[in-house]
Each structure stands twice: as structure tokens, then as C-alpha cells.
Length: 249
Image (cartoon, rainbow, N blue to C red; front, side):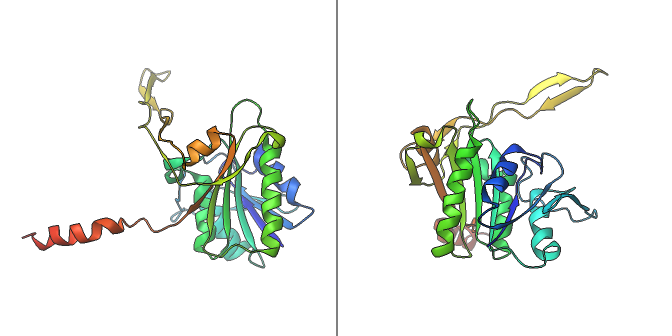
């Protein structure tokens, strides 16, 4: 089995390295990831600047671009054969609810799906322990299951793993995305030349975080697995808008 690994934390990130190490004896693993942290890059592609791919070591490459760039280049130009699966992560922090709109981790998985590859986005919901091995062990089991019971090629799964030892994980729940309260305000400061600068504030806490959501599952000690789709159409609004525009003069 051929597995492509990518992320948005950069090719040297601990989560990515831990996952590659855990999978290398059951699959042919190749890493194509950004040269530095590109968290929050979402689905952006670099269209007007040439990109470079550098080899860091055997089967590990880094790109001076976004997570989406990395996956696109790997599948459409770099690899001699397409991978059987794309795994993005293990991300350094949660990708819950509307985080998926900003997440480079999820975007890398989406690009794999666009190119016909079953794709997973994996995130560790950090607290203090940083149990990346827990998430890596769970992904390994999922990959082994996929060998005998393959996921469909239109699959995108968003996994969020509680930051605790494997024996303290209560199980796996299939969930829907919740959503957060609005983000905290930007943090204003001054640079050394007394000019204003701004830091984007932290994400808001969970608002729609009740039973059935990814927030709730992780808070209860379960791994959250949310199936994602790319169609953003608000289908329930089409008929209403059709009538509204029908009256538009």
C-alpha cells in the first residue's frame, strides 16, 4: 500500500514524523509537506509563483508552498504512481467545527479527494500530554482496516483525537461538525518603529457543541470522526432564492 503524508505544520513537525514512523512497516510511505508552518492556509494554491520541491531525506520532500500545493504537486507530478491513501497530519491542535474552513490540514485532505484519493485529516486536540503516539496508533489501525475494507474514493474523514494515552480513549464516535462562538478580537500592538500591528485573536469556544458534535465527542474522551463533503451549496435555500430573484426587476 502506498500512503502519501502531508500536513500544514511543516515537514519537520512532530506529529507528521510520529505518524510516518508508525506506518512505515505496513505501507510504503512518502512525505510531501510544506517547508514551514502554513497553518490557516485553507485551500489556497500558489498560481503565479514557481514552486520548488526539495528532498530532505529518503522519501521526505518539502515544498515552498501551501498544503494544497504539496498534495497537488505530489499526485499530479512528483510521484511515479498515485498513492492509495492520503493522510494529512497529525496536526498540532484541534480542527473542530468551523475550524475546517481555515485548516490547511483539512485542505490537504480535500485536495487528495479532488484528485480521486481517499483522504484523512488527523488532529490531536492538545492539552498538556501531547500524545501523538495515540493518534498514530489509531490511524495505523484505520489503515489496516482499509486494506480489507477500502474507503470509497470520494471519502474525506476529519479525525480529532483527545490528547490522552491510548488506553484512556473511550472509543470512536461518528459526528457532525459543531461550530464556535465568534473569534476573540485581534490583539493590537506596536512595532519597534511605533507603527500599529495586529495579531489574529484565538478561536472562540464551542457554541454548537452538544451531543452528536465533534466538540462533544472529544470532550467526553472519544475520537471524533466527521465525514466531510465538498459541496457547499445551501440546497434548502434554492427554492426561496428562486422566488426572490423571480420578483427581482
